[in-house]
Length: 162
Image (cartoon, rainbow, N blue to C red; front, side, top):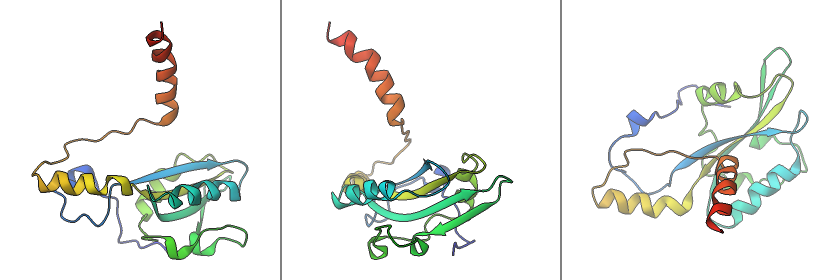
């Protein structure tokens, strides 16, 4: 069950040095699912990635949106048999709050489902700690989605190869 007390941390609330290096940055991903349900292949990709140690799965929720816009949540602990997610490997089940779910679920079409995952970028943990130790402060961060990067690189790389 989601904790109503949790709320998304806004950038302005997170300004200042890193207090602890127990965690690296965390990204939320909302993955639209084909059809109206979860495919084991989607979870397989996540478990394969977490096995590398580069990221850690902190939370996972399946969100279904009915035709009338009502949301149904399935927590990782409630996944049916056949879905290979070890609940023990989750770092912080419950990290994603209701505000996050409501905001992100707006992108899910009626009658569809999505997988919401919180991934810790473990490979950035030491960078965050060492940056804070040096007195530096993160002033901004912007993620460019892979499809946009790939489309841009497709236009740049041919020009470089000439």
